[in-house]
Image (spheres, rainbow, N blue to C red):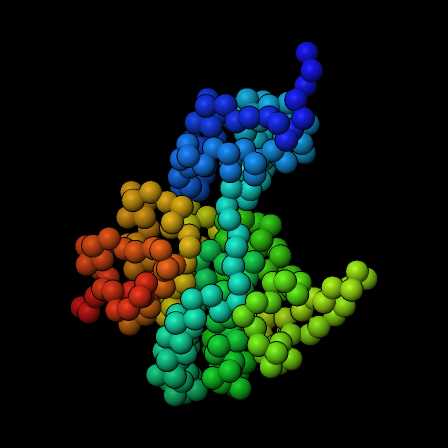
Length: 283
């Protein structure tokens, strides 16, 4: 019997259902059969890495007692980590307006907390930091912190390293690059941009599954959860909204992605105040 090349191995229906069930249990990801070709394409490299002949063998690994680390690789492969700086710029304009309204209180000893929930490679959290640094040259002296989390430990480490190839710098002006990044040239001639320490120190990067426990002991003024819940079914989303409400200040803001909405926001204690922008209902 001639073994198929990994590029030819097909995702059979039983293996698809097993992988879909595991993805949902582990992270709330909802996989549909129409995406079978995309899923098999993203997972074939895991078969190569584990020297497995087919997806049935891969599912056996995932379900085994030793499969926990591989389940992390599974979620990493299935999650699309596409982002760029200042994506959906209107949210950063709203963040700047909120900061301006609270700047006096911050300088009088107040504090501000921001959460990038689904931070991908870190551009969202850094865009928030740069937006506020542009507003306040004394930002490092204020009590302002940004928490950036993602389920994918690989992208969290990338974001923590805070070094971006030229192709990742879309949306960052030349002036911002000179103010907030240090440029280096690699051996292959490609430029890389390392985030300046004064900006990097505003952000804490951690791995976090939004469907698991949140080791959070504070309330946030702003929560970015953009292009994350699009992967979740309605039931999972409805479990998430009350949890966000619980950790959001009464006058805070929740930002979702351009194709995401809270259905019946009043039911969950929110009101929509602009494109994909929500705040808690007044008490």
